[in-house]
Image (tube, rainbow, N blue to C red):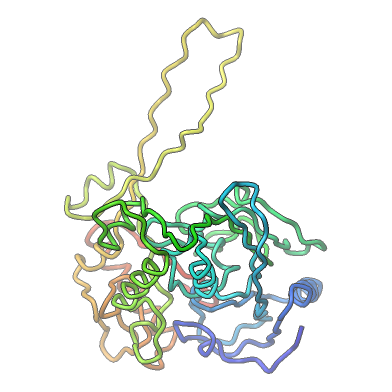
Length: 378
């Protein structure tokens, strides 16, 4: 590991806010990363790890602790126990989109719809990244991680990560304690080997995004090109010349509410059912079993509703800015809060609170932030 002169976090995050922390370390190998973490944990310093900086909203006051930059890279190809598949073990600091490009070039399918997502591979399982109906949990086998204050790294299967919609036990949600405070060292994915023949696209959300009408195989490279073009049109592809890309992506999560709450919203508000747990087991003691199983109570279903629709229909349009503020809603995507030019974290936070208040006033729902907040309160 290398200790460097701290760099202002506005230079290392896509939302471009944040002063220089008190201390900064860089780790270019797994060993260096583990050593850096152990040193910080032993000293009791406040800390966080920084990858691509694409899901961080950092405050204006200097972070009084240590920031560890994860710069590890590398992809190892491993045999898969499943016929027609291959496993990739990827270092945590590797660019996610570089990994997607690597897989597509070699005909490895399963992550092509997630082309153009910024950030690093190590951050991908933390928030279960996904796009157009494809999520990392579909191909994730395991991660190698190290728990805070633990001396040894461990391999943890994907099933133990509590993966859900844009979440896991590793993610620090605003206002909640982290389920498991650990740092991912590497990620292992299991992908289908399609070669040059392409793949039939099955998911309806992805088919709609690609404009597919038949079920003929299409090249993975074609899927990637179309997804990158779509993300660029929405300002979700990093571009130095485009202020709409100076964001943390979708700033607010889609709201997940009970069916009865969703029923109070206008019918035109987009909504999607949240899949119920179909693995629930009912245990009946033998001494009370008389040949009939009790009918289980049907739990109230949950519904995911569009935060973008709620924002726009509460009177906040694309391109909206508060007076004299350098922060604004993207001109292309209502969910993205953008830095239009040297905006402070205070300005971005003011805009976020205004959006929350408008949606709450109109629909009674309090939108929750998607990025990890460091030194910021909403």
